[in-house]
Image 1: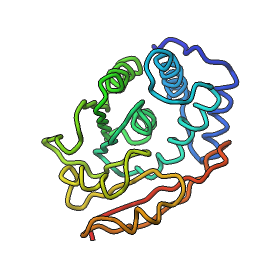
Image 2 (image 1 turned 135 degrees about the vertical axis):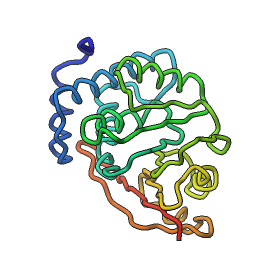
Image 3 (image 1 turned 30 degrees about the vertical axis):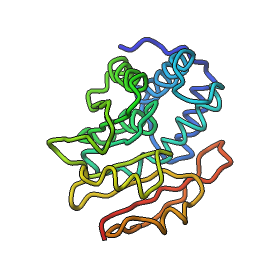
Length: 220
C-alpha cells in the first residue's frame, strides 16, 4: 500500500470537486495516487525545476485538473505517447486514470532532459504504474517496435514541428491530440502538407480562468 501523501484535506476536497465538475468518477485509489503524484512533484521541484509553479493550490488547478480535463479524449486509445512530457503532464495523470478506466491503455513519455525523465521514472515506481514507459531522447530520433495510435503534448512545440518530429511514430490511422491554451489559428494554418484538423474541443478547467483547447489532427 502506498504511504499517505503529505497533503491536506483541502487538496483532497479540491481534487474530488474538480473531478466531479469534469464528469469523472475517480476511485479512492486514483485520488490517492493523484495526490501522491502532486506531492512528489512538489518535493522534486524544490531541487529540480520541473515546473515554474510553486504554490500547491496553483499546481492542483494548473497541472492536475488541467490534465484531468483532457483524459476522456483518450478513451479507446491503446498506445499513447506524451512528447516533451516534462513532469508528467498529461502522461502520469493519464496513466493513473487509465489504469482503472482503460486497463489496456499504455502510456509512454519522452523528454530530452534527464532530470525530468528521472522524476518520471521515480513517479512510475513510487505510484506503481505498470502501464508507463519512459524514454530519455529526442522524439525525432526515437524508434519503437510498436507505433502509437495517439500522440499528445502539452505546450511542447508549434504544431508544425510537433508533427514533423514525431509522425514516424504514429500508426497510419492514428491521430494527434495537442493540448493548447488559446485556439492556435496561426499554427493550424501552418500544418504540414498531408495533415488536417479533425476537430477541436474547448475545455473548462475547474478553478482556472483561462482558455484551454484540444486539437485533434490526422492525416488528410
